[in-house]
Every structure is written in C-alpha cells, then in structure tokens.
Length: 377
Length: 127
Figure 1 (tube, each protein chain N blue to C red):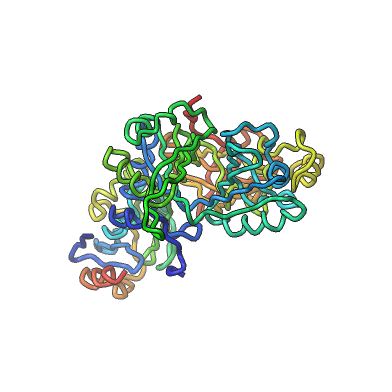
Figure 2: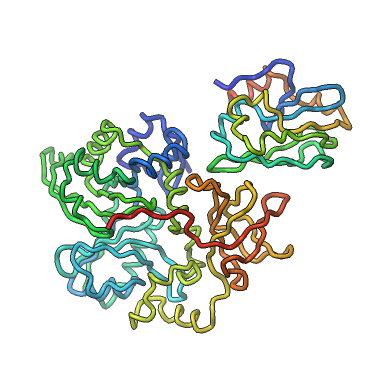
C-alpha cells in the first residue's frame, strides 16, 4: 500500500522539516510540522503555507468549452469574465456529487482550468472524457506538471507582495486570479524556459490568502523563500480544522457520491433556477419538489466531549443522523460538528444528542459556520 | 524519548498501573501522551462503574483523534481524577504524576499478566 502512495514535488522538504507524514487522497502528505493548534493559529493570526500540490489541474478548451463546462458544472459560468473563479460541483445524473471544484475562466475564449480534489483526479478526468461526446473540446489532465502552494492568513498579501514580489496579487479581488511569467529549469531539455504561474485569491481556511500554481522547481524555490521569510509551514491537520470552522465542505465527508449539494446545504452553488440544463439538475429539481429528507447542519455540544466523523446523532435514543466532521474548535474552543440529519431535526435550536462511545451528549443545532471568515474584498 | 517509571505495571494498550493495597491507580504512559500530541479532552468513567479487564473505560483525545482507554484490571471505579476535566494537558505535562482513575481490584492476580518497565520499553521500541 505505502509504496503506491504518490509524493508531491515538496516531499523532501517536508521530511527535512520533520513533518508527520500520512496518506491522504493517494499521496503521502504532511499532517503537521509542529502541532495542529500552533499551525492553525499561525494561519488565523499571521500567515501559513500549505503544500497542496496533490490537487488536480484539468484544462478544458475548444470551440464548445463554454457549453461543455456549463453542462458538467452545477454553478453558472455564463457571462463569467476572464480571470474569474467559481466554486461548484460536478454531479451524477441522480444529483449526488462526483466532486466539488473550482473553475477558472482563462484569459482567452472557450478555455477553463478545473481544480479538483486529489483523491478524485482520475475519476474526474474519466468522468469528463465520458461526458464530452458531441462536444468539440479537449480535456487535458496536467496534474502531474503543476505544484501548488496555498499561502493563507491575514499577512498573506504582505508575503505575496514583499517576499515573492507578486505586486499584482494585491489587486486581486476574492475569487479572481492572474497569470505571471517566470522561469524554470526544464529537466528534460536541460535549459531555462519561461513558464506560467497562476496566482488566485482563493483558499480553504476562512482567511484571506492566495493559491499559487507553478511547475515543480518554481514551487520548490517559492517554498524555501517563504520559509526563510518566516511563513509557518502548515500541514493537512490544520487545513482540516481551518476549513471546518469556516463552514467549508470536504469531499468524502460533507459531500460524496451519496450526498447532493442540496442536502449538503450548498444549493447556492447549484443553479437549478438560473440554468436550464446541467448534469444532475433534473434530480435536484425533483429533490426540491419532493422536499429534502435530510440536511447538513451544525451541532454544538455543551460538554467538552468531541464529536467525530461517523458518530451517531440521536433523538430520544433513536439515530436521526451522522456526524460528517467534528472537532474541539481551536479558534472558538467549543465542541462542534457538521452532521447530516433527518430534515425534522434541522431547525436552528433543535435539541439533539450525539453518541460518543458509551455516552450520549446533548447538543443544539446551529449554523454550519463556526468562525467568522475574514476574506478580503 | 518517552520515559517510564520503575515499580509500575504496564499494559500493551499503554496504560500504567500503580498498586496501592487493593486499589489500582491507572493512567496513560508518557509514550502514549507523546504519540497523541496535545490532549484536549479526557473522557473518564463514572465512579461505581464496574469494569472488566480489557474493557474500554474512556478515551484521551487530541485535536486530530480519539484514542480509547482500556482497563488492565477488573473491578469497581472508586475515584476519578476530576482535575483532568478542565486540564487534560496535565497528562502531556506529566503522564505518570496525573492518574485517570482508581479501581478497587476484584482479581489482583490479573496484574501478573502485565509488563514491567523494562518489558514495556522493549515493546515501545518496536512500535
């Protein structure tokens, strides 16, 4: 099993830093360098950087690319300006989720970058190829060629501009991006070549920040530069506590091939009303008309016990749902979770219980966002 | 390096036992607290709980994970360390000075199945 795990281009840096390494999404990834709490707080209070080179980059272009992406994507890309980014899902015809992803509108017509979850790269690529019949498009999986660093936190802009010299990054609005041209050494041809770097004002922490995509050697240099400037290297451990507090879903937990975006409470990213057609739309319309049977909610416990994924949610001793992610929230010091529960128990303020090992603990249904996000612009 | 204390009994699931008459004082080892990282919660049993050797009696939790605790001896819980409710980090600071529960043993011969410090250290070296 272990030997089949993929390494990102920054693998050696993580090992040299003494990171605790663990499998995630088919890759061997850093979970923490120091401890999750300190890394979490570094991102909330200053700046942290994550190796997210495991994420997938799939490019879609060709005369029918506008039509095709709108067909496979739940959000509405019509009228999207160049340099804009949209979050949304690819759905199966039954409305459940293939993956959640970012769609980048490129600075030329009929051209998009799809950024997908590491664990779903192969599945997504096959899915896209299977759907493109009748569309004049080219789908290219370039995931192996791109590294990615997520630079996150209130001081992210300062480091992007002053340390990395990306002055243009400061002008970026939330969910927009720009291209830079930089140089890297082409190992195959043994020459310096110019290459593309993508900088977007996006992230997965609830803080301001950037996601920077570039060839492996550029990402390696950038990692060293940021590290030397004092940016905290942060592992996937705190990436999960941060995204969870900010109410952001994780595929395999809040979304899956058994969960629709409506059930996950992400209906605003599935444009059932605005769009006449996309894969999965009919199923969502039907689910809306019939009424949801279950929905994702937040639950706060009064006790310090920690709800975790898979624990049952109960009312009067009967299971009415299941926890999808839960923590003792680092930024708010409360025991909270997101859970998928029967519709009858989803009103804010509803009393429920969570079974943790042998005991049940009382909780109250809350919003799914436990921390006020600090996005810029 | 994780430390051990001479004169205690050790379980394969990383609990230690200190014998005081017919009472077993039980905690987690330094190796265990080290492997878990910063602890944020200790799930403790109730006083008067009747436990069978090998039975789960609670858990210690870090940010990332919960790790179940198993009692090395059979008996009745006579006291729990309430200080851990508000300060689970005490286990990180000194895992041997901060016990979790005290059990009135019904079969002290069970202690013979546990390890001494040297045997426990050897086991940890292989993990």
